[in-house]
Image (cartoon, rainbow, N blue to C red; front, side, top):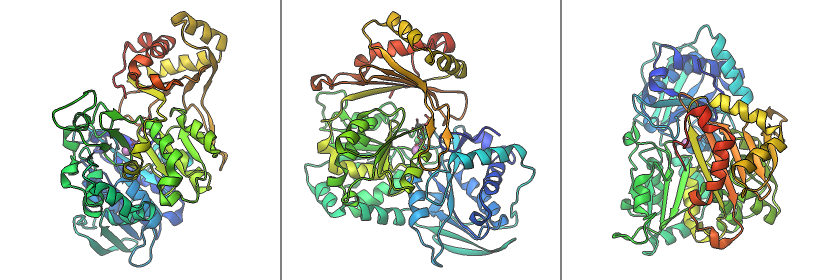
Length: 544
Ligand code: VG1
Ligand code: CO
């Protein structure tokens, strides 16, 4: 089995998951990695973004849960629960008999495409509602290498996941209940406790406020209809691609300017005027609804800025934060816009490795209220996952605040092949700063000096655990940064992410096309890393 130290769970092609025992091995290895009280007699959530193979996987996991002595399995109707909703269900839902969940199997490959030839994924979330920490994912992985057997109640009939209600079975370990419940209720209740729905409703009913929400055929559709249309009274025509599909309509459920083409066109980006007047506001989510992209009429809010904007305005805008923020955090490759806000507001600030699991400890310890990543993810301590719908609700209040502090430009590249050799070369190179500067000056004399280079390592301030090899950073004298890291969410091959950031102090220049503005740094990044030599590529496969 492949190494399970991914950024967010195990993601593979469906055909890999369909190999005999593959999914079973992962599930049993997970049960064996948990303490016995989190399995025997426990309540587990099993659901996901509804992608192809989810329904089969649910039946397998239910039968294995019964055989492992789990007492109850909770399933969102039709197996649908967004990643943030799973987190909310673990933290908030109370079963009819007073039970609480102690963890969840989330069935999703998130922003990766779905369908028989595409990706499936699975990850485990803990009792706090957040992704399993590395100590647990390492244990799961070790177990997958030595597993000899798994337990499954083959005789248990398949459960009907389309009908709401509790069904009791006599499992091999005693009574076993399957509780199928409405996918949105608990999440909607939580959102209502965070935001002032009445004032959002007023805003949406104004004829001047038009918006468009694109769920890219992911699970966000189930929540968008419920919240925006049923609760907040928006027109159904504001919703695009809001019927969840097993293959996401053949598209990439990744909300960025490349893949959310339909929404980008609708919002009139890149056009000074268009036939149809674009809506005031647009947003999109990924397959499992934890990512979000926010657009204004003819403009785009870079995700690195979203988290800074959210943090800057949280206390005034959201009742949930009225007593202040405990602190803020961002992932290392995310731009330093948040650092500026944290300094200005005198807030505790943390820089963690990529992946949401690192924010959970800070939140559990009461050190962080708002956090985000450059990859279109923002969230808060209301749950322990990033939250695309929450961000959308927030943005509908906060859009007028946008555009004032967008000073950071970031770009991300992906390329395949020989990624490891390239990274090894960069690890070795970063240790010699004079040599780095000599090379940089030779490439572009107009680029600032590199003042610091390292391989990012994180020591968790709460439990002291150390995460190594989290990417190579080059920090320039003028605040610019280059970051190289290996992606941990791909389902095959290797992907290098290159993050390029430049801080622009001059407000008159912030409207520039980011690709033009970043061109000198791009050239330095590609030549410094010998990208073409190592990978045969001189340009990225995707730029966001
Ligand atoms: C990517 C992003 C990271 C995000 C992760 C999971 O990881 O860069 O910021 O947390 O996806 O997002 P990587 O290792 O491929 O760079 V999701 O919405 O796919 O769960
Ligand atoms: Co996602």
